[in-house]
Structure formats: C-alpha cells, structure tokens
Image 1 (cartoon, rainbow, N blue to C red):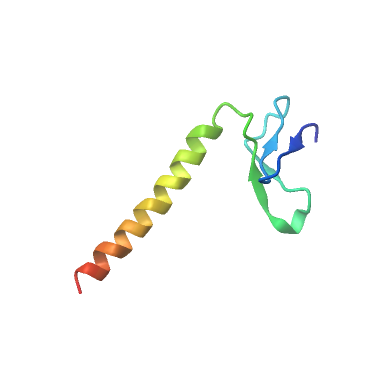
Image 2: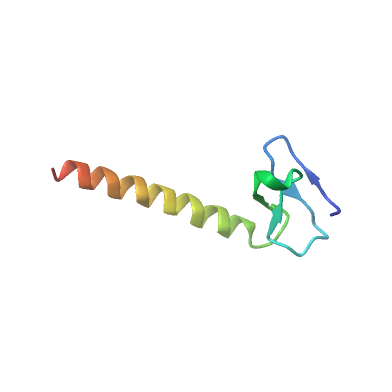
Length: 64
C-alpha cells in the first residue's frame, strides 16, 4: 500500500483506487482513503446515519 496514515487513523493514498482500506493492524478493521474522490460522500452518509439513529432514539424515548 502506498500512502500513509495520519494521527486520526485515516489513510491518505492518492494513487490507491480503493475507497475503504484495511488498517495497518489488520485485526483493527478498516478505514477510509480520504484521498479518494468519493470519501467526503461516504463520511457524510455515515455521519447522517448516526445522527438519524440518535434522533430516532430520542423521538422513541419522548413518545413514552
């Protein structure tokens, strides 16, 4: 893998065509290639899913 990881664990590999790449320590999972053109969309979709999940939980709790 050519590229490097920053202090937050994001992978910067402008020559790497993969959007999601394995972390340096394989058992730790996967990370996003932030140099990929579709990376901002993936980050926004992930954050949006988290916010919607929290909002749904708040609305369920408010209805009790």
